[in-house]
Image (cartoon, rainbow, N blue to C red; front, side, top):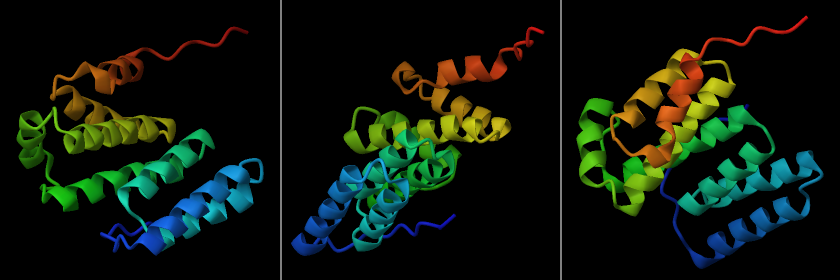
Length: 162
């Protein structure tokens, strides 16, 4: 699994157009996962801006590649943290998110962070998923799904019928 480095990329028109062309090529080659993956990776290498990171997240999510989708969700969070100069520590970040909860960057951050909780659960990291869901729930914004995730995580395992 490759590690994605998040940094503000120069948003020159040629690199942005190139990244968009690579993302379009990934869509055109959707049925050939190997080729589509290569186009996504090239787009990320060309211009890992927020739009490309979100597109890569969606690609991996819908391709059921939870590990890579998780990497992209985390990369989106890191990108926004760097852009907004937010702390990475939850105790320091929570009041900022609460005070800016109606702002687009805060909402996108919370969405990506909540998605990382769902993906952690899919990958079997239930304790980490529960931690993230509890943190998102502290923001008291139901639309991010923390209550539902906590409900799923805390429900008893279903017994299989023989």
